[in-house]
Length: 208
Image (cartoon, rainbow, N blue to C red; front, side, top):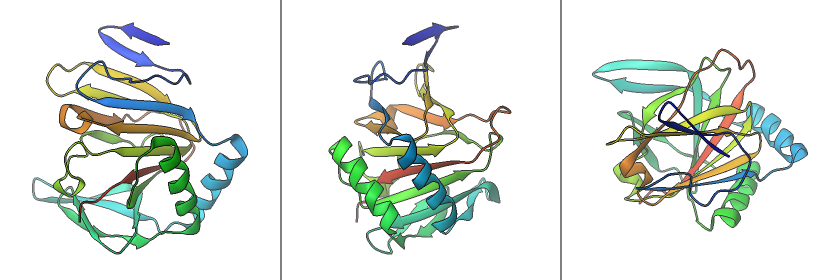
């Protein structure tokens, strides 16, 4: 069900909708693609098996280290640069390969890498941004798999400011494709209501 309030559109539902965006991009939300037992299993495994490190960024010449932790995995040890910091990919774990196959079967896309984010609680989020780095190519497809705490996720049109928000459930899949990164920003807003970790996996294709 799509709710409109104060000029904003919010979606807090597990319905599968063809495209959540009104225009200029494509976002498909598949809801829970892992059952509760599977989601719990991967959640615990990812918390303890992934080589987590605090994320780093260089913004306006200032080096910033976040509380949020990240990890980068892929087909080979290639390099990836965002926020003016370059990271080198680690090789896939067995569990990440299992999740990659699940996501590829559902989305119909193929991926060669995955950026993982660990949010320890609701105070940690992500500011408005687009995943439009040159290394991802133009009109790239990004599949976002979430386990752990359920969090609100928002999109904002770069020109009109129109917003669309939804709740990313434990074990759910969101796929962004088409012109989404060109025309829309997205973010994970902070909240005081969440005290549990969330692990988000964004499967991507680096253009080599």
